[in-house]
Length: 278
Image (tube, rainbow, N blue to C red; front, top):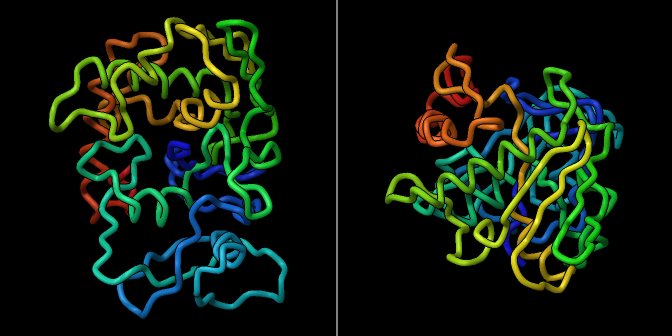
């Protein structure tokens, strides 16, 4: 199974970036594919809001600040130890090879970004329909149909829609087609995803259809290919603080959007500020 990415989405709460802040729904991570091990005190990542609940579920060896029993609460911080010499240095979920590490992906991004399909169910490495942003995909020959659940929203209260899936897919196709040492997708395998997708369309707010090359086992394609998708908010579709773009409708815009977001993501000192990662 390839890595399933992350998204800071909650049931009525959401993503930062639209302003990367905490959500209001206790996103459970019981059964996550990778459970961070407890480690000696060292580099720690401080996470806001209900991530405390998530980390408790993952048994990460953490300390929390003022909780009310087992009742999820908004606000506050949670701290947990990382492995010795660990270095979290990239926050954008579309991660290039240089930053494609277990520490960045599993110890940070899994806790911030929910993928289209979430893997981990009762401690087993299976698709979790309950925690996924979309219903299980439907296969009909070489066409795949994905239906997003309408209840998820970003922190700016915009719905998570089919356009957010197209945003990710268009960026993926453009980045791998123009790959360089600095512009690339760390999970790319030539000939596989997204090379094996010949067409992708949004139908209304909730439905995405995808045409794929050749014949694949449905379970394999879901676990290895669709697991790579993390919907991204329209608030990220820009090339500057006040410069909007349209990667969703004009794939040629996607490289400039990637470069802008990648540049912000590499600058860890601005992650907590309004001038940092959007």
